[in-house]
Every structure is written in C-alpha cells, then in structure tokens.
Amino acid sequence: MRSIGARLAMWYALVTLATMVGVFTAGRYLLEKYVVHSLDLINEDEFSQIQDRLGPGYAGLTPAQIQDRLREAAGAKSVLFYIDIHRRTGETLFLSHNLAGHPIPDVPGERYYNTHIVGTPYEMRAAEFLLDPFDVTIATSKEQILGVMRGYRAVFFGLTAVMLVVSAGIGFGLSRLALRPVRLIQETASHIGSDNLSARIPVPLVHDEISDLARLLNRMFDRLESSFNQIRRFTAEASHELKTPLSLIRLQAEKLMVDGGLTPAQEEAVQMQLEEITRLNQIIDELLFLSRAEARAITLAIRRQDTRKFLEGFAQDARVLGEDRGVRFAEKIEGEGSADFDSRWIRQVLLNLMSNALNASPRGGQILLTSEVAGGVWRVALEDEGPGVPADQRERIFERFVRLGPPDALGSKGSGLGLAISRSIIGLHRGKIRAEPGSSGIGLRVIFEIQATDGTEESAPVRGSRE
Ligand SMILES: Nc1ncnc2c1ncn2[C@@H]1O[C@H](COP(=O)(O)OP(=O)(O)O)[C@@H](O)[C@H]1O
Ligand SMILES: [Mg+2]
Image (cartoon, rainbow, N blue to C red; front, side, top):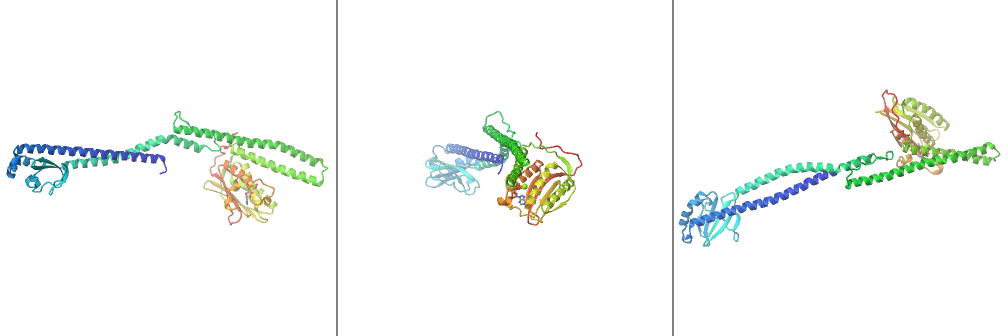
C-alpha cells in the first residue's frame, strides 16, 4: 500500500474491529453467565416447590405416592421442567412425563451443569439437589438462551460489517486531515528548482511535528538559495573580471604585432597568444551565457517563424562550411509549419552541432540535416559519418567541459561547452535535445525537438526573460 492515508485507515479499521471483537466476546461471556445463572435460580425455585409438595415425611413415601403428590405440579409445568427423583442407590422414584422414561444424566461432583437428555433436541441446564435420602435433579431447556445468543451474534456480525465500513471511512478522513500539511509540503517542494528557489512552504502558526518539519525545510531552502546565488554571482563576476585583463593583453599583443621589429619566431609566438586569447574569450562568453541561462536572465526574442525558411537559410551557410572542410552537406526538410523560437539562438545550436559534426567527419563524408514537423513537434537532426559516441557517453557529452577521445586528438579548438550551451538554449525554448547513433549505424545523430504550431496567430509571448 503506497499511501500512508490508506494504511492509517486500514489500521484504524483493524483496531476498531479488534476492539469490537473484544467487547463482543466479553459481552457474550457475561450475558451467558447471567442468563444461565437465572436458569439455576429458576431450577432452585422449582426444587423448593417440590419440597413443599412432598411435605416433611417425604422419606417414607412410595413411588406411587410421590407420583401422586407431584402430578399436579409436574403436569402443569411439564413443558418447562424436567424432574428426576431417585434414591442414592440408583432406584428411580419419579420421572416427569417429558423425560419419556429417560433419566437426567448425572455429572458426579457438579451441582449445576449442562447436559443432554436422550430424546430431547436441546441442551439442558440441570441442577442436582440433595433431599436425603433422595437426589432431586431438575433440568430446564437452554433453547431460549441459545436463541438469545444467536440473536446476539447476528447483531454483532451486522454491527461489525457496518462499523468496518464506517471506521475505514473515518480513518481515511482523519488521515487525510492529518496528512494535509504533508501534501502542502510535497506540492511546494516539487515546485522548487534551481530556477525557482524563492518558493517556501507555508507554515501554520501552530507548533507541531509537521510545522517544525516545514520550518526545517524552509531553512534548508534558504541555505540552498543563498549558495546557489553565490555560485551564480561568482561565475558572472569572475567572467566579467577576467574579460578586462584579457582585453588588455590582447591590446598589448596586437600592438607588438603592429609595431613590428619581431623575429619570425617571436611573431609566431605572439600570434599563438592572440589565438589563445580569442579562445579564452569565447570560453568566458560561453560560461557567462550558461550562468545567465541558469538564472533565467537571458532574454529570448521569440517569434513565430516558418521552420523551412529558417532551415534553408542555415543550410546555405552550412554547405559553405562543409565545402571548406571537404565534407558534403545535404538536407531533407519535410513538413510545413511554424514554431516559436529565437532564430539567433537556434542558429547558434545548429552551428554548434555543425562544428561538432565537421570535427568528427572524415574527409569526403556527409553531414545530413533533417527536419520534420509532425504532431505539434518540430524535430531537427544533424547526422554525420564520424566515429560516433559510445552509448554510455551519449548523455555525458551534454555536460560542461566533457570532451571525449585522447587529448591530442581533440585539437586545440572547443572547450567542451558547445553541447551544454545547446541543451541550455533548447531548454529555454522548452524543448529537448539528445544524441543517438547515426541512421546507418555509424556516426552520431543529434536531435532537438521544439513545440511547433500550425496556427496563424502572430508572435507569441517572450519567455525566459527576467532582466
Ligand atoms: N558529432 C560528434 N561525433 C563524435 N563525437 C562528438 C560529436 N559531437 C560531440 N562529440 C563529443 O562530445 C564532446 C563535447 O562536445 P561539445 O560540447 O560540442 O564540446 P567541444 O566541441 O568543445 O569539444 C566532444 O568533445 C566530442 O568528444
Ligand atoms: Mg562543440
């Protein structure tokens, strides 16, 4: 059972059931004892009447005389009482008619006992009295008692069924009531993410275990928020701080080149410096972008645009890039439709993918761009014929600074941020990006999906902007 509420309700119902069974059993025991005791009293009462009828000289009476004296009493009450009088020696002196000649069984050592009489269907309650030198045994049917007990049981089962349903209902209601604050915590906590760290769990004024827990969680969120903010600020500030000295170094290097008078070896060294500075600058820009994107501080200029037109524009540039590197570029654009996106950033994603594909492609290889609009989704894929990426690394390449292959084979270009940035941009568009093996089994295919619209409405609201 996954829900605490259901478990509590079940326990509540079980406890109620156990309580009811306990009360019933005790009640049954007491009731039976009480009713049986009243039968014993009735039997005693009958005995004293018999004693009266027999009179003081009873010891000398013959069976016929006894029969005579008791006829009236035993006759009238023959349905109620079963009477058996016998001598100690075992000689029977009197048997009431309803016994039909069968004596009442004797239980040695017991004065009051339950017994069965041959020829009668019910259990009897018997009492044996001493009337020296006779033994008088009087029995009464327990049928009525048994009837009462049966009724009692029926009432119990009915009540139990009703109580089980009622208590399960009450238990469920109570547990829902008790767990309401927990659900509130759950709801709030599920909304708190790196992009929404300011939400807090509402805490009631009362002091109980759950409100204490909520306070504890809120304090934890406070700490999380402040560390997140610190990290963001640090990345942003560090990037800014690095850019100024870098520009100064670049200026100096450029000045050296312009001034001339360097040996060819020195000139080459300065040239290398300039290239590295450019690369560093790019890494800083990319890091700055990532930290701003995470803080949702990137403004997207989202417009509804035709997907085909956009991709055909990109394909022209991609073809030139391919030619430059001796790689064929092909495109297969299917489906008409439009999507809401910022063309500058989606173009950046495509350029990132293209640069990776170019790096991976063998000479004379092909890079294929496919696009389709179907089922409300714009799906774009770029596929190359390179070595591909092993399955267990295909998610990792989207992480920051992850670059695969031997260090020297990676070349000096690239920082391992391209795919991380691409995922971030697609995320800002509420889309998804992933990698899979190429369609013919070789190479890598990177696919991104963005929601597409086939409507004719103009421009959509700009989202992701918090500046
Ligand atoms: N098309 C591809 N074929 C093979 N490996 C790829 C491809 N695209 C990306 N990768 C691997 O993923 C890593 C991360 O890519 P990326 O984030 O763009 O960083 P960078 O290009 O700067 O190395 C690359 O270093 C490369 O090992
Ligand atoms: Mg790259």
